[in-house]
Amino acid sequence: MKQFNIDVEACRRRQQRLLQVLSETDASGAIVFDNANVQWLTGVYFPPIFVSAAYLSVDGSMTLIAPHKAPPVAAADIVERYDAKFHSTMRNDQFDACVQKLREVGGDFSGSRMGVEYSHFAAHAAVNLTDNILDVEPDLYQLRRKKEPDELALIKHAIDATGLMYEKAREMIVPGVSEIEVFNELQKTAVDYFGEPLTGTGNDYQCCSRGGPPRGGKLANPGELYILDLGPAFRGYFADNARTIAVSKADKNQQTAWDFIMRAFDHVESETRPGKNCRELFEEVQAILDQSPVGVFNHHLGHGIGLFPHEGPHLNPNWNDTFEIGDVFTAEPGLYDPDTLRAGMRIENDYVVTETGVENLTDFDLSL
Image 1 (cartoon, one colour):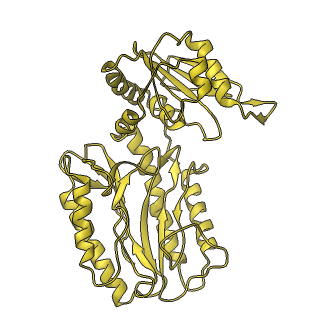
Image 2: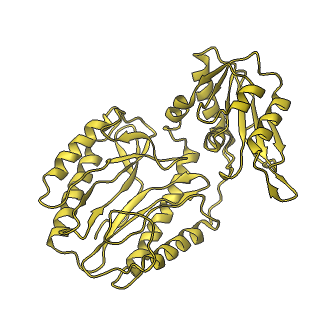
Image 3: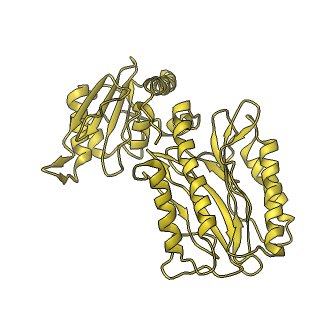
């Protein structure tokens, strides 16, 4: 089992990137409550059932408010805790308790303007801390696109688990196997590899379907295609990639669709580089897949991954993002037809954008 320790220096670099954003405003600091942003800044993962907070002052000092127990290592100058439980009972008022502890530790915020995440800064935070706030949530999402080496290592570890999960699936998927059986074995494979529980799971485990959770009683039948879109998370960081496996030998239509999807991957890997427009890449791949004599492609081409399953950049006509060095993203071309393709296929790779192009992080079997 690999060992992963908090990289305090990498966290401090991320704090400096946020400070650079704050320097262009009149804010005296930033307060974040989203556990993902707390982890991004301090390195500490807290499960979603707990509330945490991080306060970054413009002087560069970091305060972490931890639920229940103070972590042994954190990229923070001050670490304080509040009681998230009383006598082993989870509190429902954790947010208020966290805010009160931050006020106790951080002092009087009322005269200061604070950068905050609007979607996480509740009314009692405004009353007890400050109502003079600036929304830095969009900036945080933009900053999170560039993955530091410590983040990339965690993402790669999650991705490596999916490679083992697909190996297991190829052993199991035969006529008569149940979706629940496949799901259970694949989850076990990932947990065994991590040596600890998953911090997230996903996505699609249905046979002869575009996707969805495993269905009780559904058995795989000859001629069907089995889309597995796997997204295990390791200590908060998500993988997200897909393979389609034929329950029995793929027929001519299914093989034709697969050939067009491989053309799409060739285009993605040859054309993606820093400065490439993501919407433009989507449109180019759409044009390639529109030429397929079977199936339709009618969803996004991909998206960033990290501390949330879907982040920037967005390979989607509803956004106008541009690839940047350090982006970790998915490309997931698919073709669907309930009759000729039983019911379709989606294949998805994960990539990181480098100075000259992309590196494929999912270099394992693509075949049906």
